[in-house]
Length: 114
Image (cartoon, rainbow, N blue to C red):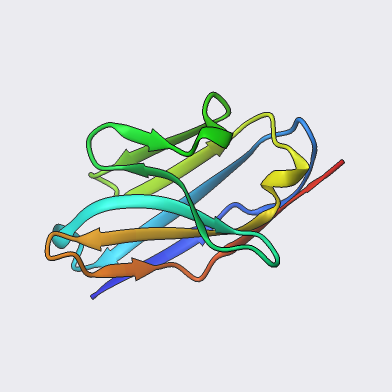
């Protein structure tokens, strides 16, 4: 079992920045990929960024968001710059194990006002 706890969401004006953090606990030695997803009202949950070795990003956040992982601290972070109203969503921390089992955090709200 892996537990994921997010922090860092909030309300920010367009053009501003936020940093999301996610702390993993439990069977952390089994963690393979870590990622951030988001789900806006009325939309499907989408992958924002993932990291195992090298990071990967959805096109809409490239150049604005940076995912980073600290294996020593068992954390993954998402630095979000130049935020846009369309970035408003609940952001979820995600990880999977080497056997492919997925785990999700509880989600943190990010609201970008225009």
